[in-house]
Length: 314
Image (cartoon, rainbow, N blue to C red; front, top):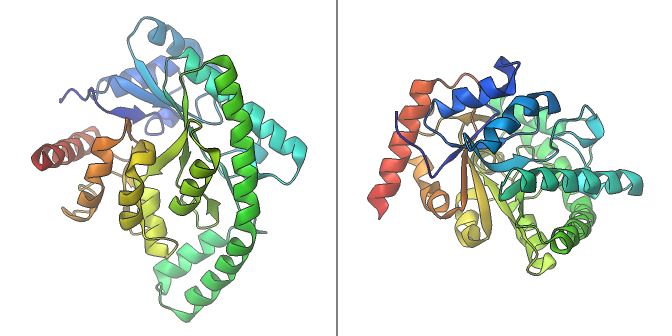
């Protein structure tokens, strides 16, 4: 088993198979990782047995994923309007929850907080319908093109106001970070649904607008691959221009339109993922974020292929 000191591993992989936090962390440590990202499903009950491990130096927390720890409230879950809410009280609550995540990150010695900042609201999950059409009829089918056009029209119309609200909310949070003198950075994550914010261009716009505040891109590679396949943006090309603004990466591969698979292994494609190796290598925080069916052997194989390729670039 390779020692993976430069990389971190998300609890997304094994959280649902455990009832106690320390057992979840120990399983990740047994993969060879010492650094762990605590995802948004980690509960306060799990933290009761994880915190002693952090205090003893048995595990290092690279990052936490907002909202942290888990709260059972659909208004503030992983797919939410969040920092862009029209409702001022909900937006204020979203800011408070992000500040809470930042405080936990600081307490655990983490350097980054992963944030899903928001989305353009739709009456139903139009992304799910688009993905179904993409699989069953193809991206060039009349049905897909028609529905995509409807989605894009609403997204283009409403995204600017949501981007501005998100930027304003993040400014409030960054004022808190500065006031407290915290060594914490925020990474706004590229998303997995076509109506969600930010695209890479929107992320760049928010970061530029915040003018030196500790807000960066959290580049989710598999999500970017998915959005490129659906037609939202030119993922592989755009990220090369923005790699200096990347705080962290979520390392996983999308097969078709299904994400969180082990790079190179599940796709059996030895080339496509190469486009992201330079971004991974330069990112300050590198996190494997995989789905539960990925086996220890597949994770080890993927890690070995990827790191060998990165070493060969130098």
